[in-house]
Image (tube, rainbow, N blue to C red; front, side):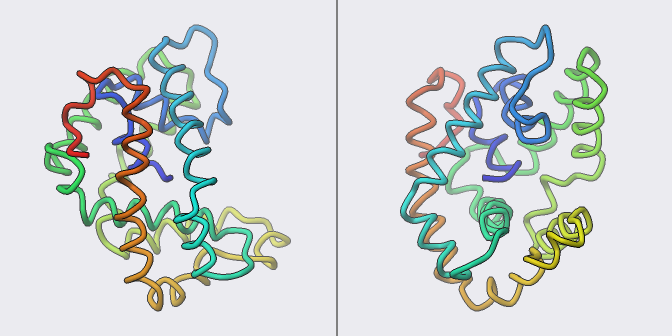
Length: 204
């Protein structure tokens, strides 16, 4: 799953959300003195990724994109943020833009005591309104282009995310329906390990 999904699939507490979001760029390691909520968020991120990677619906969706491809998992993660944005009201009682405005505001208040790397990541995500951008395919394409620009020449010779754009167009209906089947199962799994009072904004 990508960043928007990880923020939603958190307890409604900013440090849990930030721990969940920061897991990949921090390579799953919190800084010394990080709060328990940050640590729980990191644990939740890893649980989400493990469940997603092993799920047969996700495996079938990857295969529909391409039989071979180093980046098809990354592509599907970002596409899932697009589908989540498109169908947000199915899963959350708080309107998407209001949810994200609250997240942006709370994130900028919370990070003053964080190490510089974590501060820079959150400031960039908030400043560029990246989580809001996935509502449109243009935001998905922009994300693909950012990823491809970071690839080494060797990695780019094996695969790129932008090459999947026509494949997504061909398979969009299947992939979107598969997401709508998969995401409620993921939410159910996550809810089992959350404080119930902190996920009352979920519809699933």
